[in-house]
Length: 274
Image (cartoon, rainbow, N blue to C red; front, top):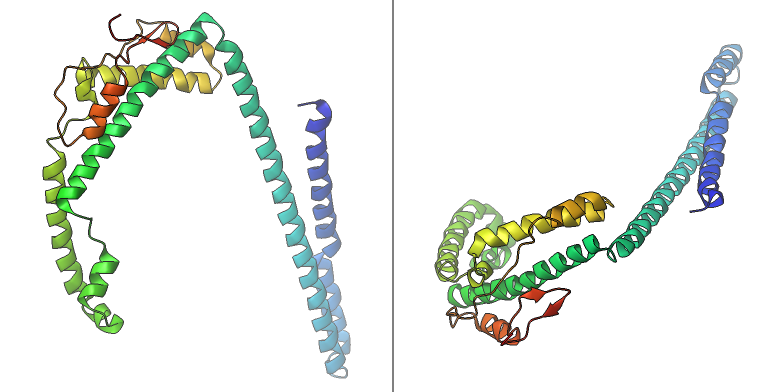
């Protein structure tokens, strides 16, 4: 961002702030109150109607001043928010540019390799969880919804309100029964980590290293990101010989479509037989 671009929003906000302060000073509520009190004492009794008109007129003027001031403050707030968004965008673009340059270094390439390792596992996790939930819903049925249940049990809205406690109790029992059927169906099915040599513990290690490296790189701290990936880089190897339950058809398909998803340097997949 050039010096000119940096000065322009600040100058514009300064103009708005100056305008607001000038209008506050111009309103001078205390002085106006004293003058009006003096006029009220002088003219009390003989010109009550005219005095009330003057009073209402001045109230309208003050209200207009307040409305104008609020409008100016809203405009100033919008300007500040816009300027903050632009600064954040500039910072984000700068970090992305620095990350792209760092990715060309040896440390950066190790970071990209770890990213590919983790994203590959995430794709298997997504497929596995989708299959697990689909089977559980097939067994347990659709999850009950309160609005549909209440409408079915009592069509009259007024009676439904009177019976709300009774209906709620019945619904909670139905919902609990559904949850038990759902849990019973999904619990025996393995998670994605089952298909990884080393199981959940290895997956957790890879996840922790990746989160540490990615967080540091996202903040532009490439030294910390390099330290995270310069350890013995964890490797995820898949259990292609594992028995895949029939309830997880897409997991079986994923493993078949990734004949060997172990990732080698520098980002090529090892074909079956290597």
